[in-house]
Amino acid sequence: MEHEDPRTRILDAAEELFYGQGIQAVGMDAVRTASGMTMRRLYQHFPSKNDLVEAYLLRRDGRWRESLAAYVSHAGEPPRDQLLAVFDWLGQWFAEPDFRGCAFVNSFGELGATTPVVAAVARHHKEEFAGYLAGLTEAAGAPPATAVHLTLLAEGAITTAAVHGDPTAAADAKEAARLLLDTALAG
Image (cartoon, rainbow, N blue to C red):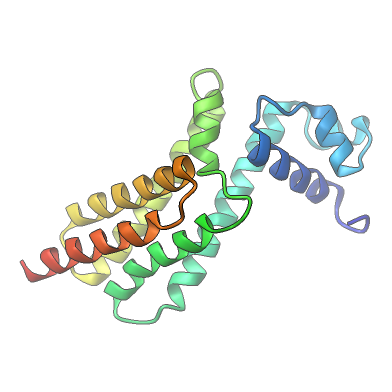
């Protein structure tokens, strides 16, 4: 870790702390300690905690969506199978030992009302995810409204898994998605 770029070390520490403990519960001193940086170096890269929070969320968004897309692309064809693979990926994510739900919902709940940049990044993440599902839905030949329904199933599964600590929410949502897709594609 000592050979990593200082910005990366800071973001890695911030991600672990913010996602694991909550943004408001973690001060800059804790990020400094976890990253092994001096406070001066920390503030050179991130002049305020809001700057660090924004960078953490933007990086997490990119990584989350890239991981999902890579998994789904390996699901192969047809596009219907790719849509259902989204729920398999969610199930793997939910089963990770450090899963605490959606970082964007969590951050929006903590800071969305008072920090416009957090609200904007959270909305962007949700819009991009919905758009991704819409693209898969269109490729599968299902009506556009189906994408909205699939998005709600996925978002509900994320929340259910976080609240109940039960990764099977993904399998339940996948079964509902399968029924929804079968109906939409038959019509």
